[in-house]
Length: 173
Image (tube, rainbow, N blue to C red; front, side):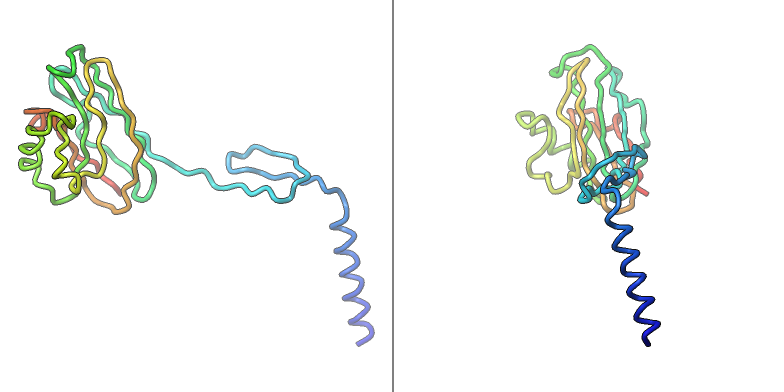
């Protein structure tokens, strides 16, 4: 018993001496940079991974992509760029990501009446996951949103008459 007590006392003393050494700590952050600090309260978080999507809309009433992919539960940063030259009143474009089960034809019909709200019908806000601003030629808009559930989501341009040609799918895996 005396021997066990002596061993435990020795281990405690050794641990105490080791911890009283240099207060300088080296911490490796999530981006692999090394930081020296005397402050032991530094907490580093893992980087948040986001999906970056770039979509272009043209004066020919087309998106450059009709299929996009993202990861469920991770932020999605979507940039829409209107590559055309026509003004917003003649050839405005946006991107509206709709919830599954949304009747696209019905949504588009209601969007026709929503000119004062950039063709986003207030009565259908519950059907929308996210949307950009309405853009004229040369403009762009970036939005960030997250979709928690895996699935296939339809995206459209809600400017009058555009949705039949300007549509695609966002596949969330």
